[in-house]
Length: 318
Image (cartoon, rainbow, N blue to C red):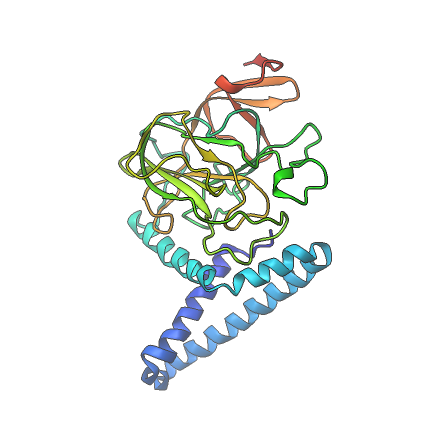
């Protein structure tokens, strides 16, 4: 998916917010020369940002026309525009809670033991403990988020031609609770985008269908992009590690069926800072060999599996 620097996006939204406030709430302040200069600078930055984005988009149209067109259409969606503002404001709120020193993998001490939220071998499409492995490092709410998919031996995530969501190995795969806890939020009504390779222009939530579980004070897990109608739990339910919560889907801002998973410090995705948690009792899979990890961070590009659900043909090595 094409994406500009998250920090540039934040400045763009701030400039847009500044302009809207002056235009509709306090237009009389535009007479102050310093504020008027700020308005000119904000307008200039927004135009420059949009030009940069347009050039990137035109480049993507050549390679992936369907995906590029769908991205442009999705950005015209009022719910998605509102989501951008919510992420911007919530990100600053989360940073302020930590006095602009958010949790890091070196110093954060998790309260709960977590395992990977699936059965079998999955591939880490995005995610890790640092900027080199995270696809959303500058977004405080998604800094330590993971995207997981299932691939075959050839590295493909789908069978046949991949034109249907049912062609994808991850679609419909069970999604599990990563630790014991209490369900605090659920969405199960968002449709799955029927066209893999594009962002659903009709999406009204970037998360799609999801489950949020409270595991401890200020530790919640979020599992997103679930299949519509598959969620088996409701708010207030107590769940156990390994319990099936639903199925992997293609709802929300998703270009193919995958599982978005993260641990965060707040119930609300928009107000949360994501947390760097180490996962317990899992393996790195390389061919027929399985390197056991009692605790650690999976990173982008690895095939991973929980101890308990490792296929029988794998040879374990420490």
